[in-house]
Amino acid sequence: MRSYLLPLLIGVVAGVIDILPMIKQKLDKYSISSAFVYHLIMPLIVYHLSIPIVWWLKGGLVYLISSIPILLLVAKDDKKSVPIIAATSVIIGTIVGIVLHLL
Image 1 (cartoon, helix red, strand yellow):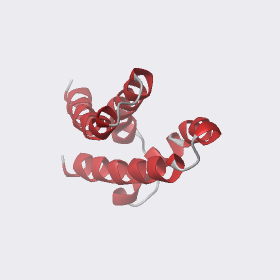
Image 2 (tube, helix red, strand yellow; image 1 turned 45 degrees about the vertical axis):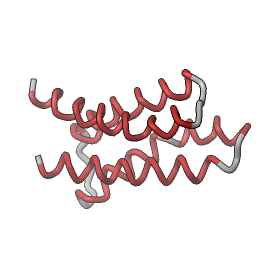
Image 3 (cartoon, helix red, strand yellow; image 1 turned 60 degrees about the vertical axis):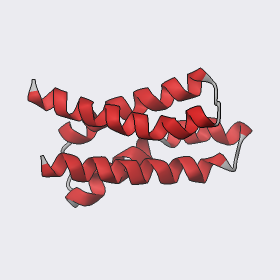
């Protein structure tokens, strides 16, 4: 149970951190929900994924790779948001990876 609960709790925190600016900008509820669910699930994947990479780089890399489909969809309508979303994914992913490693 612990192997699921802690990553989910970390995902809730990461999701809230990511969606607060989105709520302030009054983005649509589908974008906000999508971002929250993404951050809710990603720590589970990072935690259980075993890849031969330096531990502190794992979270940021996995988050960035998994955000590529989102980046492609966003690029269609708002190219300026793509680097912001990519950077946010790397930053939050790296923090999540470090926290998971320390647990």
